[in-house]
Amino acid sequence: MALRFPRFSQGLAQDPTTRRIWFGISTAHDFGSHDVITEERLYQNIFASHFGQLAIIFQWTFGNLFHVAWQGNFEAWVQDPLHVRPIAHAIWDPHFGQPAVEAFTRGGALGPVNIAYSDVYQWWLVTPTIEMETERFVV
Image 1 (cartoon, helix red, strand yellow):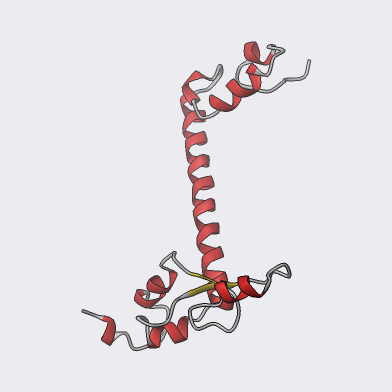
Image 2 (image 1 turned 90 degrees about the vertical axis):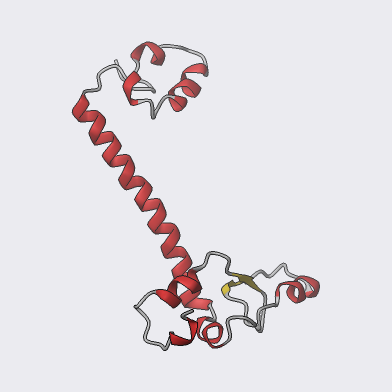
């Protein structure tokens, strides 16, 4: 007989109602309640979930860095950070009418853009990966 979801509880897997699906999802991270889990397997699951969390964090970070490097205005922002709004990325939407284009054209951009609120610009400013003079920003 093939194993049904959830694999960790065959008693629950025999339940014909949708309760088995909801209960299986809700107890997926309750490692101690699983039928045949050993201490070693528990540590393997925790270690694997940490790598999954790190993958999500790095993907989010890379997405921000990619869009700012591709369509941002970091060079202009460094010259005048008080008056230039940091641009996250451009908006390319064929459904934008003229009022929407005017509403989203900001930060010194030539077209509609999203302003960056993720502090990527500040991160790049204090990270020693970029060759620039940052003495005037040090308080």
